[in-house]
Length: 465
Image 1 (cartoon, rainbow, N blue to C red):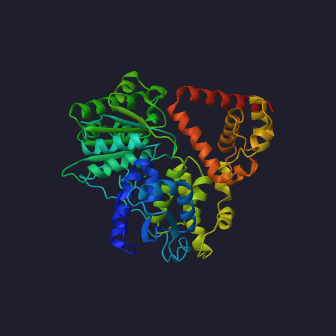
Image 2: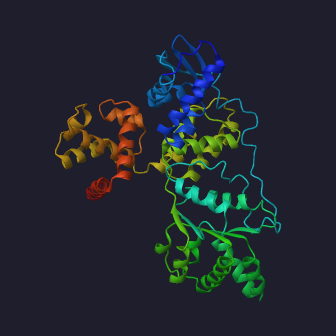
Image 3: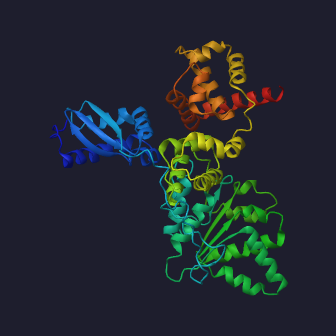
C-alpha cells in the first residue's frame, strides 16, 4: 500500500489520480475510458474522502454507477486511508447545451485542387485520424487505415473496407488521404466509383483515354468509395483492372470501400475480386451505444454546440446504427435550437423536434413487450411472472436475459422503459444484461449460434401473426 496523502495537497492528489488511472485504463476498454474517465478531474482529498469533478450531474451518476468500484479500488491500492470516492458535478455545468452564441457556424472547408492535393471529390479536412472515434466496431479498420497512411504501398495493399451506410468508411478513407497528402510531391485522388466511371466515359467520348490513364496511374494514393457500383460495367472494370495493376506494380497505395466484402460483390470480374483480396479486407460494424455517444459529442463540439451527458446519451440511445442519421439529427437540433432561441436543451424539446428521426428508428414499435415476454415464456416453458421477477435460478435467469435482449433489439425502447416492463429493474441492470449477452456472442461461437437460432425462430413466429 502507498503512504497516506496529506489532505488538501493538490499536487499529491493529482499525482495519486494519475497513478490510479494507469490501473483503471487496464480494466476499461479505450472507448469507455476516453468517454467517461478522461473528463474526470481530481478535486480534493480530505479525511479519506476523494472528490472527483465531473462535467455534469448525469455524468457523475453514470460514472458512480458503472465505474465507481473500479476507481475506488485503484485509488485504495495507492492509499489505504481513502474510504470513499465521490463524483461531484462541476459548478455551472447545467448550461452545456445553452448559451452558445455562434453554434453551427463552423463549416468544413474544401481543399482546392492542386497537383499535390489530387483531384476528384475534395478531401474533407475534418476527416482525420485525430477526430475518428475508435470503438470495438471499427478498431481493426482504424488500425489498418493508420498503418496504410504511415507506410503507403507496403503495409496492406490494397486496403478494402466494407460496411453498411453511415458507419465511418468514408471518414477513414479520407483520413488516409489527409494524412498522406501533406507529403512533398504526393499525388492523392479520392473519388467515388461513379465519378471514375464518368471520367472514363468522358475520356472515350473525347478520345483522351491516354490522358485519363496517365492521370490515374501517376498517383501515389488512389481512394475509391463504393467500388461495388462498377459491377456489371465491363469496360470500366477492364480499365480499373489495368489502373490497379499499374499502381500496385509501382508500390502505390490503393484503398477501396464497399457495402459488402469482395466475394459478395455482384457482376464483378473474378480477377478484380482476387486483387481486392490481395491486401487486407476489414469490416466496420454499426457503433455500439458508448461509441455513438462519443461520436455525437465529438461532432457537437466541432459544430460549437456542446451537449450535456444526459442529452448526448439520450440521442445516441434513440438513434442507433447509422452515424449519418445521428449527425442529421444533431444538425436539425442545432438549427431548431437557433430558430427557437433555446438556451437549454432538454429531452422534451428533442422529442418534439426529432420525432421523425426517432420514428424512423423504431418503425417496428408494433412489437410489444407483452408479445416478447409471452413468446419467451412459451419457448423456455417458464411463466411471464418469472421473467419479471428477481429469482436467480438459472432456469429463470437465462430466459429473462433473452427476453430483455429481444426487447432491446426489436422494440428499441430506452433502458428505463425496458426495466419498467421487467419488474421495475433499473437501467443499469438492463444495460448490464444486454452487454453480457453481446460479450458472450462475441467470445463464444456456440452461444452466438444459439442466439441466432432463437432470434430466427422469433422472427418466423412473428411473421405468422
